[in-house]
Image (cartoon, rainbow, N blue to C red; front, side, top):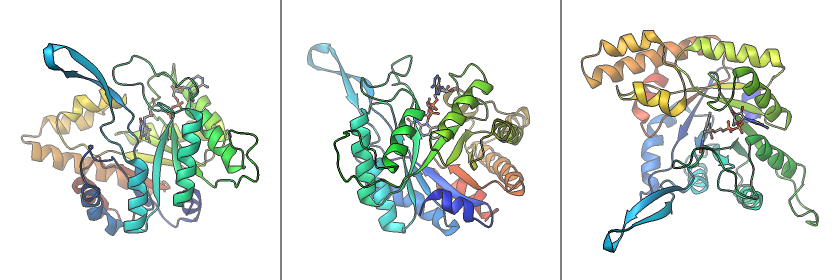
Amino acid sequence: MKLIDKLNQRQSTLFSIEILPPLKGKSIQSIFNSVDPLMEFKPAFIDVTYHREEYVYKKREGGYLEKVSIRKRPGTVGICAALVNHYDVDAVPHIICGGFSKEETENALIDLKFLGIDNVLALRGDQIKTEAVFVPEPDGHAYAIDLVHQIHGMNSGKYLDEETSDASPTNFCIGVAGYPEKHVEAPNLKTDLKHLKAKVEAGAHYIVTQMFFDNSKFFEFVAMCRAEGITVPIIPGIKILTSRTQISALPKLFHIDLPQDLLDVIDACKTEQDVKEAGISWAISQCKELVKADVPCLHFYTMGNPESTRRVASSLF
Ligand code: FAD
């Protein structure tokens, strides 16, 4: 089912999760093990992230280093198909611009169509870890909006080769990313919102936000989106703090602020178990307030750790 229909037909706030493909070599059972504990909350959908290649240096005989391109977490599309098959749940693959030519994107979307997967989250992707800026493929997309245009075009039966005859249109529901605390590269939030609005006008049906720990940032972001004329559902992304190291890691990785009240609570924790408990209670209060505000869905970044999400979900759903 298309997510936008689920979002429009909902009676209350929905529950959804995002998972990562396992490291290369691990079995699909590791995915099921991390999803099983959350199925009792009937996720409206499960997102599966996409991880592009990165470069590593391998030590070779004679002492020289060889630069090798590897993908540590392949399998996004296969995992989506396995989730649909195993749980009969809607799975949403993340599709990125980075590393893909337009034709490779088209072929990936055709695979999804044949698999009966009709929801996608369209993203630009970050730069390769060892590069300073995002570089699109020579025949690829520079921004997520270009990817949205391509998917929207296929939904109208427009394929890259204009001679493709009797092309059957795809029927993708398209999600895009939004940043309550602004995307790191955007000069300011207003400009970022202008680009977000353009993604919606290009055909995106809903927005999922970057994680945030201060609800006022989310509420302000939604108000600014509405003032700009963005009317589609905006789904808050929730991350539950699970370790002290995340206090410095999350702002660095995701370019977000952590509220002082949360830092004070974590500072007062004596053990890592105390930090976990504090992270769970913070997320429960955050989510209760969001549910009260009737957000369309709570989307949990589980990052392979279902236990804390299960604890939070059981106090809400
Ligand atoms: P865009 O919308 O293209 O925006 C990127 C930047 O360019 C922004 O600063 C924007 O303001 C600016 N911009 C946009 N359009 C234009 C334009 N026409 N001209 C000039 N500037 C413009 N990454 C992954 O690699 N895999 C994943 O699975 C993944 N999942 C994610 C899920 C969510 C919910 C979120 C929030 C992020 C996810 N990311 C993922 C990270 C994301 O790919 C990065 O944040 C990336 O840097 C930006 O992607 P975007 O789709 O928001 O890009």
